Picture 1 (tube, rainbow, N blue to C red):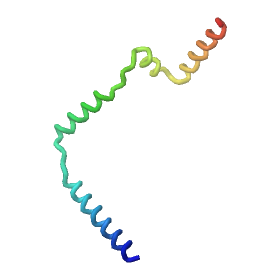
Picture 2 (picture 1 turned 90 degrees about the horizontal axis):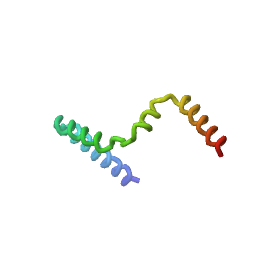
Picture 3 (picture 1 turned 135 degrees about the vertical axis):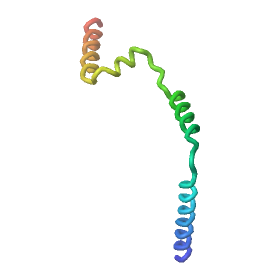
Length: 77
């Protein structure tokens, strides 16, 4: 039983030391900006203009347009 208490104490001490060290770390602002730009450019969606314009339309209008399209397809089949 005493081993569990000492293990918890030790874990808490280690966590406190890690938190203290993490608080002392400062990131170069230029590095942070460059990294942010690289991440944005790497994960930018590559969609065509039709999909992009379709997403700007409200969901209700999209639903109506899809129902009209479904009606046309069913009437032609």
